[in-house]
Each structure stands twice: as structure tokens, then as C-alpha cells.
Image 1 (cartoon, rainbow, N blue to C red):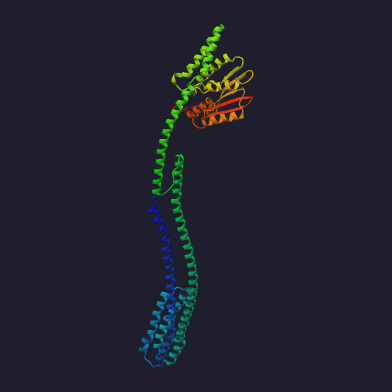
Image 2: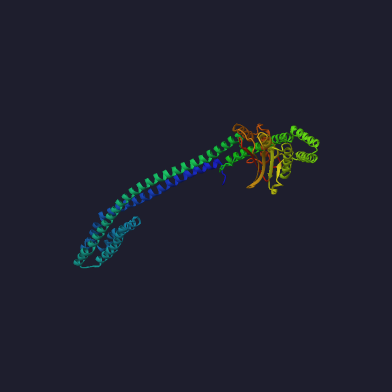
Length: 470
């Protein structure tokens, strides 16, 4: 889109309005002038032809009669012929002013009659006999002058009718022109209004959008769209606001990144804390096994405890492979199974194809711990923990299911709210959920479903790629 300045747009609107009006007025003047010119020529033709008919016949007949009866000599012929010459001049003048086809036919006949009259006038002077002169006078001269006068009268009639036609036509045309002028004026005004409205919209719409963008920035939404405009000034204003929003977003992102890093560090420290009761109870169990002579079971528990702590440390890494997280969880459950042999069973079914998927450390173990302490232990009789993994599109679903006591509806709602908001109700679950959101982003995290007396299902969704910059 070509960008222009507001001043140029205003000038174009004014010129676009004035030029059609000026052209319209000039066209109207040209058409009216043409009709006035034709009207004036018609009036001039009528005046000239009417004056011609008043004297021509009498002057020619009288002059030639004087020559015929001998009152005047043949030398008087040039004086009489002058009327014919004047008639020819009038005829040429009428030709210039006449446009009607019927009237031009009359003029053509007049021209023929005048030539014939001139010829007969010369012949009459050559006749010597009186009777022959009078016969030529009656049969030629008077008949021709009468025909000329009659033809001129026909010309006058045709011109008069053409004048009436012209007046009627002019009236119609004037009405048409006035109507056309009104229509064109309305069209011009409509075009002017349309351009004015478009100009107004081209200013108010982008300004309104810019105002909306400023409000969005004020609300914390920095993803503002570019304002589409053909005005250079508004484009510069929009570009400045978008650059300002981008700078503000970058600053806020930096601050948010620092806060997330601090928060994640806190979560990592809290997650890394080992429940001292778990450690005490495990060591007591090992001592009890040794005292009871169950050395092999004690060695196995020590081995599991070693794996548990080795994974907890993980050389300081907070992100490990899913296979390492699975071993960590297995070591924890096997230690607990030694203590709760009569009530705890567990199964883990995670396909080996997911072994190299990177996950935050302590993703599954806290869920298994929650299932044991809040589900299985509170149930009479034995209980089972099932850990599964499956593919869901490009994501991976990890699910921990127990058939323990389950939760009341009020407690479930409280836990679900804590998972969504990061509050500390049921800290282990909310901490895991918050770390997942930090590492994987929106759309990933944890869901929990439970029914009192039937058990609990905790499901986490993770991506195949983890954001290691967190």
C-alpha cells in the first residue's frame, strides 16, 4: 500500500471535488452556447429572408418591365441585375447559417432559379419585338420571380418550423441538462461525501486501533497487531507504539525469567529434601532385617536406598532420562514394599521406547509416594499402584493409578485448585505440576481424578522436548 501524507490526501479530496464541478459547468456553458448560436443564426436567416421577400420581386419585375416597354434602355439592365447579385449574396449568407436539410433544399432551388432568372433577363434585352418582350416578361421573368419568392417563403416556413423545433428541442435539452446537472451534482456530492467518509475512516479507524493497542499494552498484552493505514504519520505513530510495546515486553520477560528461575530454584530445593521419616524408617527396617538374619533382604534394601539417593543427587542435574526416573521410583517402591509387604503391590508399564525422553527429576516418585501415603495406607487390606506410560500425538502421558481410599469431593476440589494455581495444599503434587508447567509451557501439566472408596488417578502430560533454558 502506497503511503501518503495527510496534507496530500486533503488536497486530493478538494481537487477531486472541484475538478468535476468545473468540468460540469464548462460542459453546460458549451452546450448552452451552441444552442444560442444556432438560435441566433435561425433568427438572422428569418430576418434576412423576410426582408428579401419584401422588395425583390417588385424591384426586378418593375425594372425588367421598364426595359420591355422601352421606358428604360437596355443599359438599365445592370441596375436591375444588382437586385439579383444582392439576392445571390443573401443566398450565400443563408447557406452559411442554414443547417436544416429542408431549408438547404430551398436554397438550392433558389440558386437554380436565380441563375435561370439572370439568363432570362439577358435574353429579354436581346429581343427586339415588343410582343415577344412582353411574352418573355410574362412567361419567364414574372414566373421566375414568383417562384423565387415562393421558394423563399418555403425557406422562411421551414426555418420557422425548424426554429420551433429548436425551441422545443432546446427546452427539452435544457430540462435534460438541468436534470443532468442535478444528477451529476448529486453524484459529485456523493463522491465528495464518500471520499470524505473514507478519509475520516482512514484517520479514525487506525487511530482507534492504535488506542486499542495502547489499552492492550496497558492490560499486559504486548502481542499487538500492526495497524493497516496509508497515512505516513499514523504509520510512524503505530510503529513507535509497537516498538515501545516490544521493549516493555522484553523488559517484563527478563524480570519474569528471573522470577521463574528463583521460583524454580526454590522448588528444586524443596523437591530435593528427603522426608527424614522415610530415611529413619528405612534404616530401622534394615537394622531389623539384619537382626532377624535376613541379610539378603537387607542388602537389597541398602542397594535400593543407594539407587534412590544416587538418582536424587543426579550430579546436580534437575533433568534426567525417563529410565532414570523410573529406576528412582522403583527403588522407592521396593523399599516401601519391604516395609508394607502385606498391603503394597505395584506395577510399572512404561514402553522402553520412551526411556531416553528427558523429564524433570522427581516427576513420578512424588506421585507414587502420594498414592502410598494418602491412598493405600488409609485402606483396609492390600492395595496396588499402577504406573503407565503411553503416547498421545506428539506428547507423552504418564499415569499413576491406585485403588486406595480415594478423596472426598471437597478435598479433591481443593487439590485440583492447588494444582492449577500452585498453592501449597498437597505440596508434593502442586510442586510437580508447577515444575512441569515451567519446563514444558502452557497445555502441559497434571490432572487428578479421585472417588472416595475407589481410588485415585493422577495423569501428567509432557512433551517429547523439554525447555532446558528454564
